Length: 270
Ligand code: 2HA
Ligand code: ZN
Image (cartoon, rainbow, N blue to C red):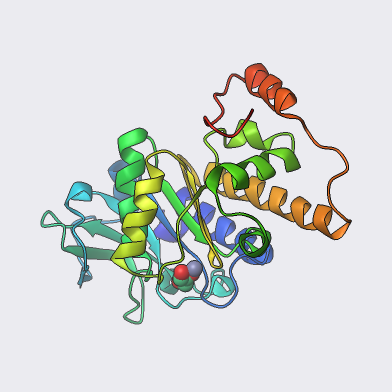
C-alpha cells in the first residue's frame, strides 16, 4: 500500500473536498494538521527516509518525535484530488523542536501551512486536555465569519446564540465557542492566543477570518465545525426573516444538557 492509498490520506482528501464544496476554503484558504500514529505510517512509508528539513519559527519541542500530515502553504483545497502529494505532506517534528523532517509530499518545494504555529500550539494545548486529540482544522466558514460582524463577540453571548439556533448544538459543543481578538494570521501571536483558548474549548473563532476546530478524528472535527457553521447559517436566516419570535429557552437548554449528559459552559444559561 502507498501513502496515497492509506486510510488517513483518503480521509484527508475527502474531508478537504467536502470543505471546499461547502465554500469554506476559497483560493488557498484553510489548513489541516493531522497527528498520525507511527504504526499506521510505518505501514506505508520508510519513516527514516528524510526528503528535506524545514525550519520552524517557534518551539515545538513538546511535539518532538510526532508525525503529522499537514496541508501546504498557498495550496488550493479545490485541487486536492488532482494534486494530493503537492497539497499534502507528512512531517516529523525533530527532537530540537525547531525543525521538521519532511518524509513525504509537499512536492515542488512547498512549505507547510503558514498557520503552523497555531496548529502546533493548538495540538499541544488539546493533547494536555485529551491525549486522543489528533486533528486541527482551520477554515473560512461563511456564516460564522458573517456573524462575527453583526453579533456581540462576548463568548457567552456568541455561544448562547449558536446553542439556540439548533437543538443539537449544546450537545455537540457544551463548552461553547471561544473568541480571540482580531490578530494578523500566520503569526506566533495568533497561535498563542488561540492555543490559550484551546485549553477550555475545541472551537475558537477568529473574528472576520474563520474558525478553528479540534478533535480526535477528521470526521469528529469536521462535524464540530459543520454544526457551529449550520447554527450560524440558521442565525443568518433568522435575522433576515426579521428576528426571533420564539426560541429554545434556557430551561429547555438545561433539560437537553441533562438528557445528553453534558455540562454546559458556566455563565451562558440563566
Ligand atoms: O492558509 O487560511 O489563515 C490560508 C489561511 C490563512
Ligand atoms: Zn484562514
